[in-house]
Length: 81
Image (cartoon, rainbow, N blue to C red; front, top):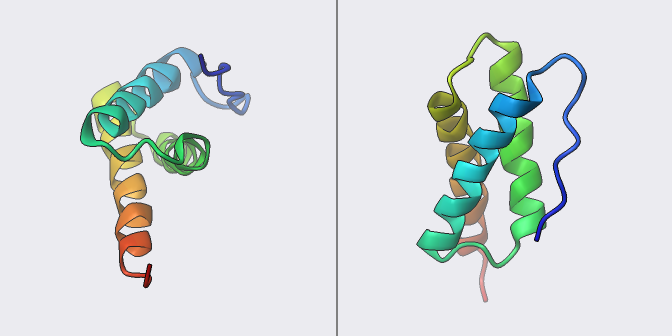
């Protein structure tokens, strides 16, 4: 069980928490949840930036989080193993 994310005061924690849950379910179902804590942080940061730029819908926020996570994942895949 993951602890609740500590959101900044200038955002709506309920909406962002729902959006982050969507991102984490996506990571689990896509098989990319190996580094959950780090990817969760990347997604949350992208969603906070989106919130501050005016995005308010949880699906749009989660899409921003997923896009950020996929950039991190694709960058990892480019490194030699």
